[in-house]
Length: 166
Image 1 (cartoon, rainbow, N blue to C red):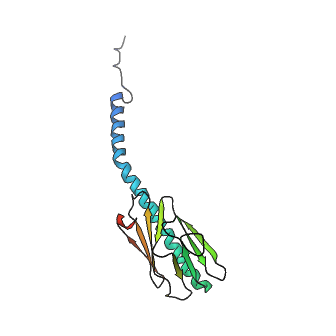
Image 2 (image 1 turned 180 degrees about the vertical axis):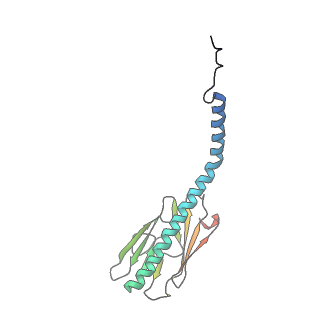
Image 3 (image 1 turned 60 degrees about the vertical axis):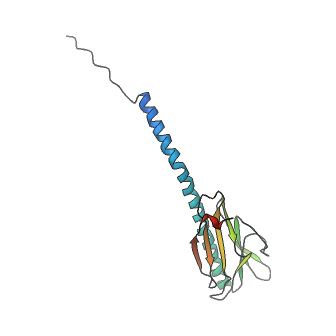
């Protein structure tokens, strides 16, 4: 006895189905990529704000523990003569010979602007120079963040608009 031949079976996806899937995937990626870049920029600015906030808390704690003034500058020189944006922050122990306590590097693409050339923390509780630090994304994808140091040495964070960064 002979059996009738089996009908041909189709395995896998056809060319048209694969092209449709690739086209749909490219449209979805095209729509999501700009928001992903913004999300990454927001993350960089948030990381920089966290690093800067921790460095300012360290400066305050060091001033109280060492009994000496600690200056926070936007450069590696202890005289703090810097204008414009910077990619790092240096904590200086203001003893007879200034000594760098810590250097804080910011994530790539983030710059910090300060309202003063030097922010100082003194060895007495509730004594610091009021300063604000603005963190900006170089590509202007993320909203800037501002860290404000009160005269008590406490740090608070504000979120600004794109107009806050020059």
